[in-house]
Length: 328
Image (spheres, rainbow, N blue to C red):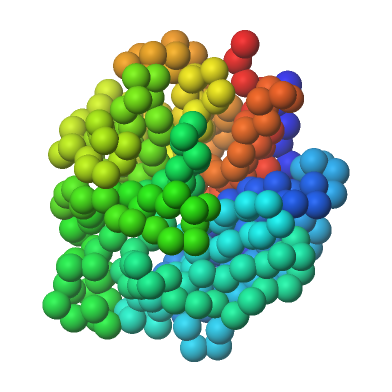
């Protein structure tokens, strides 16, 4: 049976809720790290917070501040939990993404204290880093979504038009994220091009990309993520919204998303599963179609338990936890 729990309700002056990531911490607690602050995003008032659960999502704490500035916005890009360390990939800007910079901050005490943010030197500006994928050969992959090709990198990409030209690729690490190398970039893709990567059964890798064209795009790599093919349209409907891919140890690929081709209609919220490298989706189930926008699901899979655990935001002002039962 699926589980739904209301975690947090935004209210002025911290009305906005967005970019949530549910992670299992080293001590066994769960945490949802998310953006709040201000009436919407992007605003200088945006900051990063977290709520905790000590009982596997049944109850959640009041929010704790992770990173907040008086003069800069803070947005969440990705959260990586590895051994005893939590790494949060952070975006900061002056409003409307002007002077957009990328940082990493870490905690080794289950998110109670944090080291000062340090620049992410490989891609220090105008870039979002998306969900980590760890391959069967133990290499790490961080998909990227970048707008770092404008002449004036301190300007707002919303105002100079460069936000309409996204480029995608992946970063690779063979030493658990201490150092990274970068693939080729593909694009440009019009719009907000969040991406995820997965490994396929024949050794190839696939990347799905949001493209704001009524469906997701797909790119492939035959050299373990070093080079990616030009993206092509898929038959996976998408209204222009972030999604989440997971690959199970069986090779099954699970997709949490909004299967709707109508732009801006982020409803319903569904779970799909494929057993043939995303050629077809033999299992499709709507988790909820409660009226409103059901946005940006992100979390983790517990294969032993048979659940996908994730959080999403409802209409950019409520944070919801979901435990979705996987199909047999």
